[in-house]
Length: 408
Image (cartoon, rainbow, N blue to C red; front, side, top):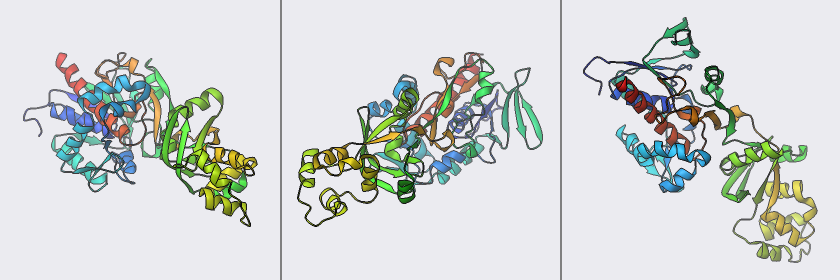
C-alpha cells in the first residue's frame, strides 16, 4: 500500500527489468517516491521474451546445489539469495495472485506458463504504490553537478534524485534494451567493469557445406555432452553456424574460457547414451550381411540422420572398425571455434565488479548509486537461476538505498 505521508526522498531507478522493478517495489514500500526510467517504450521486454517458451521463474533444487550454479561469484550471490531465495521468490509470485508449480525437471513455472499476467499484476501493484514510469528515456550519464541526464522524445531531461538504482541489464538482446551502452558511462567515473561476454550462448563449428545444407535446424537427441569433467544430458540443435541448445548453454562459461585461452574447445558427444562402449562394440561387430553400412548403424546402434552425419563429418575413418567406431560414438570430438555474437546470447557475463560495490550494492566511487541485476559481474545457466539472482539483487539494492538514506 502507498504511504499515507508525503515521500521523504526521491529515488531514480534506471532500467525496468526484474531487478529494477524489484528495487522500485522495495523503495515504494519504504516510503520513497520512485521514478523508473527506461529507454524502451514499455518495461520488462526481455522478461516477456524470455517467458515466451514458458516462464521459468526459479528452480526447486536444494539450495546448496542452487548456489553452485553461480560459479566463481557464488560468494557474492549467496548473501543476496539468503535474503530472497527461490522459496521467497515463489511466495512473492503467489502474492501477486499467480500460482506456481514445479515441472518434471525441477524448474518452477507460473501455473499458466506465461510472463505477461505476472508482469501486469506487478505493474498494477507498483502503480498503486505510487511508482511512476518514464519511458523512452535513455540514460546519458551524469551532468557536471552530478544530476542524471536522459535523452527522450522531447529532448534532454535532467533530474537530481536523492539516490539512484542502476539496473540496466547486460549486453545481450539489444533490441529489447540490454545493449551495454552504460559500460563507458561507468568506466568514465573510474569504475571497473569486466568486459561483457556471451553467456548461455551458441558456438561456431566449421561445418562442411554439405553437412550445413543437409542438417542445419535439426536436433541431436538424446545426447550427453561433456567438457573438462562436466556432463549434461538432453539435446542440442545444429545451426548453420554451429550448435546451440540447453546442454550447450549449461557449459558455455568453461567452453568460452577455453576458446579464449586456447583458440578452440573440444566438446565430446555421447551419441548413444544408455549403452556402454563394450556392448556397443559387440553390437557393431555383428556381421553386416547384405546390409549397407547406413542400415547396419541404424539397426545396431540407432545411428542415423544427423547423428550419422556427425560421424561422417568428424570421424569417417572410424566407420570400418567396430571398436574404434564404438569409441567415437561414445565420445565424438566436436571442435568449437568461437562463441556466437553477444547480441545472440541469452545472457551475458561480465559487468560491474563486486569489488567496486559495498555490501549493499552501492558503488564505492559514487555514493548514493546502487547497481543490480545482470549488469553486475556474474553469470548462471538457464533454469531459473538468472531471474532469481536478478530479483534478489534488486531487492538488496532497494534495501541498501533505504538504509543509506536513513543513515544520512
